[in-house]
Image (cartoon, rainbow, N blue to C red):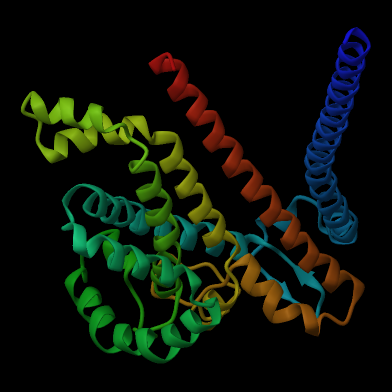
Length: 328
Protein backbone atom coordinates (compact mmCIF):
# COMPACT_ATOMS: atom_id res chain seq x y z
CA UNK A 1 0.00 0.00 0.00
CA UNK A 2 2.85 2.37 0.79
CA UNK A 3 4.46 1.86 -2.60
CA UNK A 4 1.12 2.36 -4.32
CA UNK A 5 0.47 5.56 -2.34
CA UNK A 6 3.94 6.90 -3.13
CA UNK A 7 3.45 6.15 -6.83
CA UNK A 8 0.05 7.88 -6.84
CA UNK A 9 1.50 10.88 -5.01
CA UNK A 10 4.43 11.06 -7.41
CA UNK A 11 2.10 10.84 -10.41
CA UNK A 12 -0.10 13.61 -8.99
CA UNK A 13 2.94 15.81 -8.41
CA UNK A 14 4.16 15.26 -11.96
CA UNK A 15 0.71 16.08 -13.31
CA UNK A 16 0.60 19.23 -11.21
CA UNK A 17 4.07 20.28 -12.33
CA UNK A 18 3.12 19.72 -15.97
CA UNK A 19 -0.03 21.76 -15.49
CA UNK A 20 1.90 24.60 -13.83
CA UNK A 21 4.48 24.57 -16.63
CA UNK A 22 1.71 24.63 -19.21
CA UNK A 23 0.07 27.57 -17.46
CA UNK A 24 3.41 29.37 -17.28
CA UNK A 25 4.04 28.88 -20.99
CA UNK A 26 0.50 29.99 -21.86
CA UNK A 27 0.85 33.08 -19.67
CA UNK A 28 4.22 33.92 -21.21
CA UNK A 29 2.80 33.57 -24.74
CA UNK A 30 -0.17 35.74 -23.78
CA UNK A 31 2.01 38.47 -22.25
CA UNK A 32 4.36 38.42 -25.24
CA UNK A 33 1.50 38.61 -27.73
CA UNK A 34 -0.13 41.55 -25.97
CA UNK A 35 3.20 43.35 -25.62
CA UNK A 36 3.96 42.85 -29.30
CA UNK A 37 0.50 44.13 -30.21
CA UNK A 38 1.10 47.32 -28.22
CA UNK A 39 4.55 47.73 -29.78
CA UNK A 40 3.05 47.16 -33.24
CA UNK A 41 0.69 50.10 -32.72
CA UNK A 42 3.62 52.36 -31.83
CA UNK A 43 5.63 51.09 -34.79
CA UNK A 44 2.77 51.71 -37.20
CA UNK A 45 2.20 55.19 -35.79
CA UNK A 46 5.88 56.00 -36.03
CA UNK A 47 6.08 54.59 -39.54
CA UNK A 48 3.16 56.72 -40.71
CA UNK A 49 4.69 59.84 -39.14
CA UNK A 50 8.12 59.17 -40.68
CA UNK A 51 6.61 58.49 -44.10
CA UNK A 52 4.62 61.72 -43.99
CA UNK A 53 7.62 63.77 -42.91
CA UNK A 54 9.83 62.22 -45.59
CA UNK A 55 7.22 62.71 -48.30
CA UNK A 56 6.51 66.32 -47.37
CA UNK A 57 10.13 67.37 -46.85
CA UNK A 58 10.55 68.86 -50.33
CA UNK A 59 7.51 71.13 -50.02
CA UNK A 60 8.28 72.16 -46.45
CA UNK A 61 11.89 72.94 -47.26
CA UNK A 62 10.85 75.08 -50.25
CA UNK A 63 7.94 76.99 -48.75
CA UNK A 64 8.80 76.84 -45.07
CA UNK A 65 6.33 78.30 -42.59
CA UNK A 66 4.64 80.25 -45.39
CA UNK A 67 3.07 76.96 -46.49
CA UNK A 68 0.76 77.27 -43.49
CA UNK A 69 -0.09 80.93 -44.02
CA UNK A 70 -0.52 81.09 -47.80
CA UNK A 71 -3.94 80.73 -49.40
CA UNK A 72 -2.74 80.36 -52.99
CA UNK A 73 -2.83 76.89 -54.53
CA UNK A 74 -1.61 76.95 -58.14
CA UNK A 75 -0.23 73.72 -59.62
CA UNK A 76 0.71 75.50 -62.87
CA UNK A 77 3.16 77.89 -61.18
CA UNK A 78 3.93 75.35 -58.41
CA UNK A 79 2.90 77.81 -55.75
CA UNK A 80 1.19 75.98 -52.90
CA UNK A 81 -0.30 77.03 -49.58
CA UNK A 82 -2.31 75.03 -47.08
CA UNK A 83 -4.25 77.81 -45.36
CA UNK A 84 -7.52 77.31 -47.24
CA UNK A 85 -7.72 73.52 -46.66
CA UNK A 86 -6.76 73.95 -43.00
CA UNK A 87 -9.44 76.60 -42.56
CA UNK A 88 -12.08 74.46 -44.25
CA UNK A 89 -11.17 71.38 -42.21
CA UNK A 90 -11.34 73.16 -38.87
CA UNK A 91 -14.51 75.13 -39.64
CA UNK A 92 -16.54 72.23 -41.01
CA UNK A 93 -15.46 69.85 -38.23
CA UNK A 94 -16.15 72.41 -35.51
CA UNK A 95 -19.63 73.22 -36.82
CA UNK A 96 -20.42 69.52 -37.23
CA UNK A 97 -19.42 68.76 -33.64
CA UNK A 98 -21.33 71.76 -32.28
CA UNK A 99 -24.45 70.45 -34.01
CA UNK A 100 -24.00 66.71 -33.41
CA UNK A 101 -22.94 66.67 -29.75
CA UNK A 102 -26.08 68.16 -28.13
CA UNK A 103 -28.36 66.23 -30.48
CA UNK A 104 -26.46 62.98 -29.89
CA UNK A 105 -26.50 63.39 -26.12
CA UNK A 106 -30.19 64.28 -26.26
CA UNK A 107 -30.99 61.12 -28.22
CA UNK A 108 -28.96 59.04 -25.77
CA UNK A 109 -30.80 60.57 -22.80
CA UNK A 110 -34.14 59.87 -24.46
CA UNK A 111 -33.23 56.25 -25.19
CA UNK A 112 -31.97 55.54 -21.67
CA UNK A 113 -34.32 57.62 -19.54
CA UNK A 114 -37.51 58.55 -21.39
CA UNK A 115 -38.13 56.25 -24.34
CA UNK A 116 -40.84 53.56 -23.94
CA UNK A 117 -39.20 50.17 -23.72
CA UNK A 118 -40.75 48.73 -26.94
CA UNK A 119 -39.25 51.60 -28.94
CA UNK A 120 -35.74 51.55 -27.49
CA UNK A 121 -34.40 48.73 -29.59
CA UNK A 122 -35.83 49.87 -32.97
CA UNK A 123 -34.59 53.44 -32.47
CA UNK A 124 -31.20 52.22 -31.27
CA UNK A 125 -30.85 49.96 -34.32
CA UNK A 126 -31.85 52.83 -36.61
CA UNK A 127 -29.16 55.05 -35.10
CA UNK A 128 -26.53 52.34 -35.54
CA UNK A 129 -27.59 51.76 -39.14
CA UNK A 130 -26.81 55.41 -39.90
CA UNK A 131 -23.20 54.70 -38.96
CA UNK A 132 -23.06 51.88 -41.51
CA UNK A 133 -24.09 53.97 -44.52
CA UNK A 134 -21.07 54.51 -46.83
CA UNK A 135 -19.80 58.06 -46.96
CA UNK A 136 -20.22 58.23 -50.74
CA UNK A 137 -23.96 57.64 -50.26
CA UNK A 138 -24.07 60.63 -47.93
CA UNK A 139 -22.20 62.61 -50.57
CA UNK A 140 -24.58 61.67 -53.39
CA UNK A 141 -27.61 62.40 -51.21
CA UNK A 142 -26.09 65.70 -50.13
CA UNK A 143 -25.33 66.78 -53.70
CA UNK A 144 -28.60 65.78 -55.39
CA UNK A 145 -31.14 66.16 -52.56
CA UNK A 146 -29.87 68.16 -49.61
CA UNK A 147 -27.92 70.88 -51.44
CA UNK A 148 -30.80 71.76 -53.83
CA UNK A 149 -33.16 71.95 -50.85
CA UNK A 150 -30.81 74.36 -49.06
CA UNK A 151 -30.31 76.39 -52.24
CA UNK A 152 -34.00 76.95 -52.91
CA UNK A 153 -35.42 77.28 -49.39
CA UNK A 154 -33.06 77.54 -46.42
CA UNK A 155 -30.22 79.68 -47.72
CA UNK A 156 -32.38 82.42 -49.30
CA UNK A 157 -34.39 82.63 -46.08
CA UNK A 158 -31.28 82.94 -43.90
CA UNK A 159 -29.71 85.51 -46.24
CA UNK A 160 -32.84 87.65 -46.05
CA UNK A 161 -33.21 87.14 -42.31
CA UNK A 162 -29.73 88.37 -41.41
CA UNK A 163 -29.38 90.98 -44.15
CA UNK A 164 -28.07 94.24 -42.72
CA UNK A 165 -27.11 92.77 -39.35
CA UNK A 166 -23.40 93.41 -38.65
CA UNK A 167 -21.39 90.20 -38.46
CA UNK A 168 -24.22 87.84 -39.27
CA UNK A 169 -24.76 89.39 -42.71
CA UNK A 170 -21.14 88.55 -43.58
CA UNK A 171 -21.37 85.08 -42.07
CA UNK A 172 -24.42 84.22 -44.19
CA UNK A 173 -23.74 86.27 -47.31
CA UNK A 174 -23.42 85.58 -50.99
CA UNK A 175 -25.50 83.79 -53.58
CA UNK A 176 -27.21 80.59 -52.43
CA UNK A 177 -25.07 77.98 -54.16
CA UNK A 178 -26.46 75.11 -52.12
CA UNK A 179 -23.00 73.62 -51.74
CA UNK A 180 -20.37 75.14 -49.49
CA UNK A 181 -18.94 75.06 -45.98
CA UNK A 182 -22.27 74.99 -44.18
CA UNK A 183 -23.67 72.19 -46.33
CA UNK A 184 -20.62 70.02 -45.77
CA UNK A 185 -20.79 70.79 -42.04
CA UNK A 186 -24.40 69.63 -41.88
CA UNK A 187 -23.55 66.44 -43.78
CA UNK A 188 -20.67 65.79 -41.38
CA UNK A 189 -22.97 66.38 -38.41
CA UNK A 190 -25.36 63.73 -39.74
CA UNK A 191 -22.47 61.32 -40.29
CA UNK A 192 -20.89 61.67 -36.84
CA UNK A 193 -24.21 61.76 -34.99
CA UNK A 194 -24.66 57.95 -34.77
CA UNK A 195 -21.14 57.49 -33.37
CA UNK A 196 -21.67 60.03 -30.62
CA UNK A 197 -25.17 58.76 -29.87
CA UNK A 198 -24.23 55.09 -29.76
CA UNK A 199 -21.22 55.53 -27.49
CA UNK A 200 -23.04 57.99 -25.22
CA UNK A 201 -25.98 55.61 -24.87
CA UNK A 202 -23.67 52.72 -23.98
CA UNK A 203 -21.86 54.71 -21.29
CA UNK A 204 -25.19 56.00 -19.93
CA UNK A 205 -26.25 52.36 -19.49
CA UNK A 206 -23.23 51.80 -17.22
CA UNK A 207 -24.48 54.26 -14.59
CA UNK A 208 -25.47 52.23 -11.49
CA UNK A 209 -29.23 52.19 -11.07
CA UNK A 210 -28.89 52.92 -7.36
CA UNK A 211 -27.40 56.34 -8.11
CA UNK A 212 -30.29 57.39 -10.33
CA UNK A 213 -32.89 55.86 -8.05
CA UNK A 214 -31.43 57.72 -5.08
CA UNK A 215 -31.60 61.00 -6.98
CA UNK A 216 -35.18 60.35 -8.04
CA UNK A 217 -35.96 59.37 -4.46
CA UNK A 218 -35.03 62.79 -3.09
CA UNK A 219 -37.22 64.52 -5.66
CA UNK A 220 -34.84 65.22 -8.56
CA UNK A 221 -36.30 65.61 -12.02
CA UNK A 222 -35.02 63.75 -15.07
CA UNK A 223 -33.09 66.86 -16.14
CA UNK A 224 -31.43 67.11 -12.72
CA UNK A 225 -30.57 63.41 -12.65
CA UNK A 226 -29.05 63.66 -16.12
CA UNK A 227 -27.12 66.81 -15.34
CA UNK A 228 -25.98 66.01 -11.79
CA UNK A 229 -25.58 62.23 -11.88
CA UNK A 230 -25.46 60.65 -15.33
CA UNK A 231 -23.26 63.10 -17.22
CA UNK A 232 -20.66 63.60 -14.43
CA UNK A 233 -20.41 59.82 -13.96
CA UNK A 234 -19.89 59.16 -17.68
CA UNK A 235 -17.96 62.29 -18.75
CA UNK A 236 -14.90 60.29 -19.85
CA UNK A 237 -16.99 58.02 -22.06
CA UNK A 238 -18.89 60.97 -23.52
CA UNK A 239 -15.61 62.70 -24.32
CA UNK A 240 -14.43 59.52 -26.01
CA UNK A 241 -17.51 59.49 -28.21
CA UNK A 242 -17.05 63.15 -29.08
CA UNK A 243 -13.40 62.57 -29.97
CA UNK A 244 -14.35 59.61 -32.15
CA UNK A 245 -16.89 61.75 -33.95
CA UNK A 246 -14.40 64.60 -34.32
CA UNK A 247 -11.82 62.23 -35.76
CA UNK A 248 -14.39 61.03 -38.29
CA UNK A 249 -15.26 64.62 -39.20
CA UNK A 250 -11.64 65.70 -39.60
CA UNK A 251 -10.76 62.85 -41.92
CA UNK A 252 -13.98 62.47 -43.90
CA UNK A 253 -13.29 62.65 -47.62
CA UNK A 254 -15.92 61.57 -50.13
CA UNK A 255 -19.03 63.11 -48.61
CA UNK A 256 -17.27 66.44 -48.11
CA UNK A 257 -15.79 66.37 -51.61
CA UNK A 258 -19.27 66.14 -53.13
CA UNK A 259 -20.79 69.14 -51.34
CA UNK A 260 -18.08 71.58 -50.26
CA UNK A 261 -17.36 73.10 -53.67
CA UNK A 262 -13.61 72.34 -53.74
CA UNK A 263 -12.49 75.98 -54.00
CA UNK A 264 -9.07 76.94 -52.63
CA UNK A 265 -10.09 80.20 -51.04
CA UNK A 266 -11.13 81.52 -47.66
CA UNK A 267 -14.42 83.35 -47.28
CA UNK A 268 -16.18 84.73 -44.22
CA UNK A 269 -19.48 83.37 -45.51
CA UNK A 270 -20.47 79.84 -44.58
CA UNK A 271 -22.42 79.63 -47.84
CA UNK A 272 -19.27 80.07 -49.95
CA UNK A 273 -17.51 77.06 -51.52
CA UNK A 274 -14.33 75.89 -49.83
CA UNK A 275 -12.18 72.83 -49.40
CA UNK A 276 -10.68 70.59 -46.73
CA UNK A 277 -7.40 68.76 -46.42
CA UNK A 278 -8.86 65.34 -47.16
CA UNK A 279 -10.96 66.63 -50.08
CA UNK A 280 -7.93 68.34 -51.63
CA UNK A 281 -5.84 65.17 -51.39
CA UNK A 282 -8.63 63.02 -52.85
CA UNK A 283 -9.28 65.40 -55.74
CA UNK A 284 -5.72 66.11 -56.79
CA UNK A 285 -3.43 63.26 -55.80
CA UNK A 286 -3.98 61.33 -59.02
CA UNK A 287 -3.32 64.50 -61.02
CA UNK A 288 -0.10 65.42 -59.25
CA UNK A 289 2.49 65.23 -62.03
CA UNK A 290 5.45 66.79 -60.25
CA UNK A 291 7.52 65.99 -57.19
CA UNK A 292 6.74 69.34 -55.56
CA UNK A 293 3.03 68.95 -56.23
CA UNK A 294 3.01 65.47 -54.70
CA UNK A 295 5.09 66.62 -51.76
CA UNK A 296 2.65 69.47 -51.10
CA UNK A 297 -0.26 67.04 -50.98
CA UNK A 298 1.65 64.77 -48.61
CA UNK A 299 2.34 67.86 -46.50
CA UNK A 300 -1.40 68.36 -46.21
CA UNK A 301 -1.65 64.81 -44.89
CA UNK A 302 1.06 65.57 -42.34
CA UNK A 303 -0.81 68.68 -41.21
CA UNK A 304 -4.02 66.69 -40.79
CA UNK A 305 -2.09 64.09 -38.79
CA UNK A 306 -0.72 66.82 -36.50
CA UNK A 307 -4.11 68.51 -36.09
CA UNK A 308 -5.72 65.24 -35.06
CA UNK A 309 -2.90 64.45 -32.63
CA UNK A 310 -3.05 67.91 -31.04
CA UNK A 311 -6.83 67.78 -30.61
CA UNK A 312 -6.70 64.34 -29.00
CA UNK A 313 -3.86 65.45 -26.70
CA UNK A 314 -5.81 68.55 -25.62
CA UNK A 315 -8.89 66.43 -24.95
CA UNK A 316 -6.86 64.05 -22.82
CA UNK A 317 -5.31 66.94 -20.92
CA UNK A 318 -8.74 68.42 -20.29
CA UNK A 319 -9.98 65.12 -18.88
CA UNK A 320 -6.98 64.94 -16.56
CA UNK A 321 -7.73 68.46 -15.32
CA UNK A 322 -11.37 67.53 -14.68
CA UNK A 323 -10.33 64.39 -12.78
CA UNK A 324 -7.83 66.35 -10.68
CA UNK A 325 -10.47 68.95 -9.72
CA UNK A 326 -13.03 66.31 -8.76
CA UNK A 327 -10.49 64.18 -6.94
CA UNK A 328 -11.19 61.14 -9.08
